[in-house]
Length: 280
Image 1 (tube, rainbow, N blue to C red):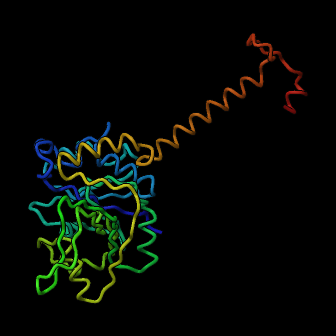
Image 2: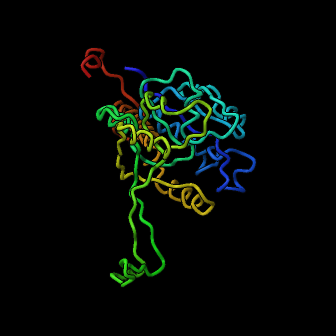
Image 3: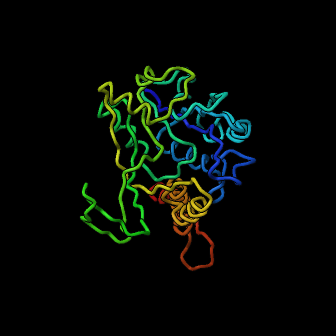
């Protein structure tokens, strides 16, 4: 089985998050004590992804200086440059050697989604495109009037909460979909989805109840930083596992040390006969 491959879309200018993104690309915006994309890279590595392509454009030299070839994270990173904005999908046509199936995601997505489960779901369902979705609730601060074609009121809802299933900015692609994407032509995801649907090809949804933080606006960024700090172990479970392993190691060493003590609390060890030691 091929090593799972991920394409990170990191070429945008992050205009909605200005002024934070004037001097550095949005994926390098810090959340907690590390950039967003650093968190994403650690999550994907934990999920089994080891091969990465970063589709870069705006301030790409900063991303390349920070991440290099990926050896710091024990992964392989290569870079694909877009000279002009190409949308979500068209940058994929510039990448050589993509595997039959690969993950694509925005470089500013902060989520606790199970990336391996998404990968396996895509393969198990023989989909050509799988879109990770999250149920998002929107609070309407106004009274919503419902009426029929005669303009007679049929309903009134005061400040309702509406639910929508929204794209999380995380996808699984089959390479075959790229035959619907002309090279070098701006193509976004909605355009590709409609082309696939019109051609009768399989597009699936992967519903996720994971934590998902939109970091589009300055107020969203502040909230995301707070949520990440509160839920760090859920976003980075490998850190929690490492701390637990270290604690177990310490406990094991302490237990071994206590086992060699004479029990009188003076810290002095008594030598046992060799035969007894061999059975200890």
